[in-house]
Length: 298
Length: 326
Image (tube, rainbow over all chains, first blue to last red; front, side):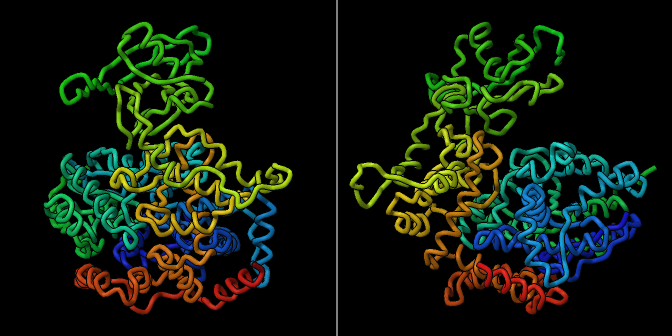
């Protein structure tokens, strides 16, 4: 498989371990990629509050760049996935709107015909590579590791723009991945709720309650770690967990929040450093120890 | 199991019960199994339970045609009008259905919630038309086009599903909530209303107003009538900014984001954090510092000089073309 690779701002900024671990895992799987270096930020739904059309234009420009390369887009961030899917959904169902946007892109020599698909690494691995093939690259069986999925918002809603009717397995993609590495799923109701990141600078008290509730509940249910496809959820659930847990629950941050490629990398036998697990705010030492002690895969 | 040729199908239900008569209220889960017609809705199944198995089960319904908004409750964790939900769509292989009362609202008994919270939120936005004059004809007229624009918001049947699943209300009862904000939008967009600026300013300024929404889209997903409350909240924010309300962290956050992408083609995360806190807001900036230092020690502080998109001048030119056209 070959993708037009769109890592997103956060994987190149506040969560560099996501970028590094994704590239390491993709290399191991032989996934080819060309990075979309000219593409702009998706707007993350924030820019859209001021100007929805500007957001759609920026995203359609990115789709056109990938279309010229004849490649599907791969993203690492569920917010990128959600915002791009919504923009793609809007222009595909409204040819007049797409024509209006294309007029703005014409001076740059770009035109979007509506053929680009956008897939998060998580979806790409399951739908394009397949869990069976993925499992063949694993060297460890992560039995005895309990992991709580945390989808957040943008990869589950709105379900029509995310094509859930055509791809129903997307609804359980993190659970399926956790099971494929040999781990156990710690299910909890908050897995598709908001992590609190979007209101971090607007209503921090509410944001901290969300962080403390999600990480505290998953820990109480026996999770060793939380797995998320969203670097923004990671920034809040990991970076602000010490403050949130102290402020809201009066306890300590004790739940590592790992990225999707880090989980896969652990099953592939990669080291803590290769996956950037030492860069987390909440210590990942215990899960690294458990992974290293896990039985070799037969 | 569903069988198109069969006259009945089995429905397995796990229902959350609540009896306020017991001291302090008693909550428990109870399992039921009923035989209903294969085309049945979840409501049909619940009525069957009440009529054939257990007359003590309390639930509320009226029109059975998704118009009255009485039968909102949680099916497998998300709010739905059960009269509009067919069993085969939520349990295609005969799976057990989990039924609970709506969230974020006071449970009266079993599946019945009080709508007091809902209507106190709605009342906060003065949910009625406030024109500035009485026309000579005695009739307020509005163009078809302006009314068509209001259709999404006017579809609200006040069922409370959006309030039930709102992730902000889960942690903050002071948030005005998605239904009230969608209702407010309906009046700010009505050409006959004279309080547009005042409504926008109030919802912009007040604690628990338009900027407290996290954009989680749960309300969009669960609304049975296509109101898409969060989309309406985004339109309120856009309108509030256009009307000159620039005093919130939400505004600074949005503005900083917009300008960062214009300038670099990418997001400048460090700048976004400082802009949102406010450059002169010393307590907020000091509050950010420990997080920044912890991130730096782990080697994950966003770069001070942000990554730029290659040829980022082209993104800036595009911005200017679009801004000029508007």
